[in-house]
Amino acid sequence: MTVDPRAALDRLVAALEAHYAAVVGKNGEDDPAVDDAYDVLADAFEVYDDALGTVHGEATPFYLGEDDEDDDEHDDDEDEDEDDEDEDDDIEVVDRV
View 1: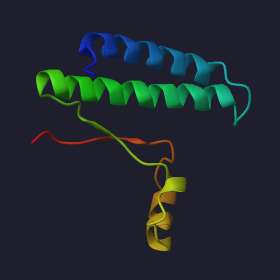
View 2: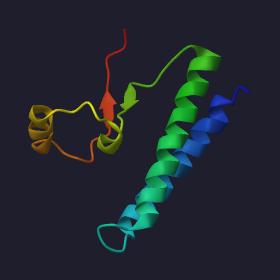
View 3: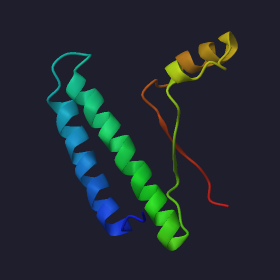
View 4: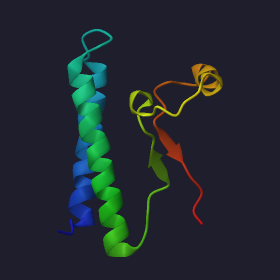
């Protein structure tokens, strides 16, 4: 099933707004509302990016990184390098080819 890119964009914008609201109103460091909003935002982004590619043959300049918990291939050297970086950076900007 192909999703309309405009509808997917509207959902992505709404997910961004909801994520921001959850972050601003969070209760403590481990507020599940922020985690839930994060998951909805990530899903909305993937749907939008897929719809844009399917319908228009285009992509966004972003890449959603995998969670560190799911990636067993990290070695100790990589983990030390990542400690110096912002741990919340899960979106990477990539160059268009």
